[in-house]
Length: 341
Image (cartoon, rainbow, N blue to C red; front, side, top):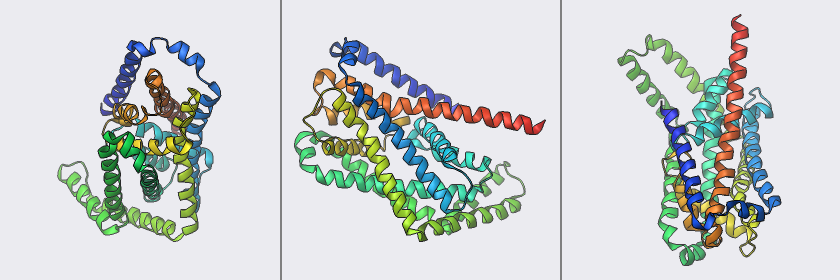
């Protein structure tokens, strides 16, 4: 039911966005605007989204390879798309990692190791995106203060919350004693409400999974070369994602802003809306784009630019990742039926 509500909310926001655009006097001639759009740059913005996915899959592949887990780049790409889909339709993007862990467990990867793959990836991503945005904020602080001062509290709040969250998450997931206490509390609670029987059996499994998890965490921490490689790929991944707006800017025949101008403000937009609990930060993302980028796009094409940006960076992501997820589910179901026969 929760998934249906989240999907319904995403669809509703898309319909509302389209309705606003169609009713807008400035965008009454959307076909004309599309005809004047440079398709070459529009294709490049789509390719940036593809680059984002490929980088994500490469990161998963490298972490799994370092941990001697089976799998190829194709399976890693499938994991990326499953994560992207469930992250896009759940508040705070919380559904992605559990869905990826489930998929890896179905591929016979121990749950402790599967969890450690995604926890390491998540923490590295959060470190990089937070530092990336802080650097961009420092580089563009005078511009933000003079041109888009109204957005300053949201940007600072986003950076502070992400940084604080990163410290808390790192403290939790790198401490096996805390992990065990939390897991035992959940197990005892489930036993109390009669959802779990024979808790001793599960405690033995729990110790085993936590041991696997901590060994995998330590292996990645020790491999500094691999950690550095993943950090560099993550920087490239984020740059791909933030570059979508730049190529949309060029596609609409604007040239005055530099590449650094656009990706820096886009990274600040990411920080400003990251703590919004709606699926895909729907509503906040569009509003934030309107506030932060109205200094770059003229008023008669700003709403059209928002539409292009969201279609490529969010709705295209849902369509493609959702398609991959459905195909994977169908294939798994068919294999299960064949094995049962």
